[in-house]
Image 1 (cartoon, rainbow, N blue to C red):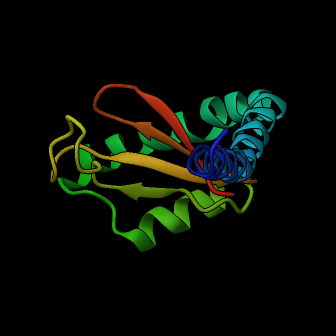
Image 2: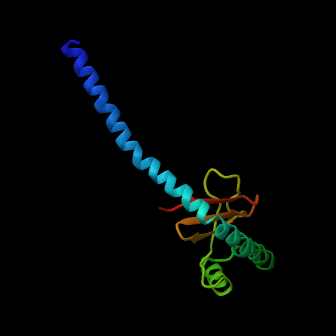
Image 3: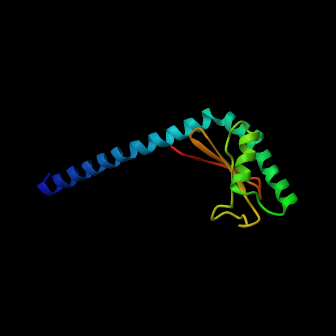
Length: 131
């Protein structure tokens, strides 16, 4: 093996070690997220069924009665009083979704290390990990 080949192998090995060293934390973070999702799945299901879906219906009824969406203060007051002090956010559709700004909405709630979302216009449930 000549000197050029030796350094090529050496630098290749260093690059490989650095890639693995950087990838390990990413794998661990992904594993933490998956473990959290599994451990909290029943809590998330219960929260969708007992908080987010009913809150969505309240927003629809509010809009039907008053002809407008509730303000942040109105939604906050209702959610805190009806869902054991939990603050449920009423938000416009996120960019990139099929919801119409001004008419459609989603409700969101932070539960432990997750934010649970329910899109009122299509019934889609999704969550985002906050850690």
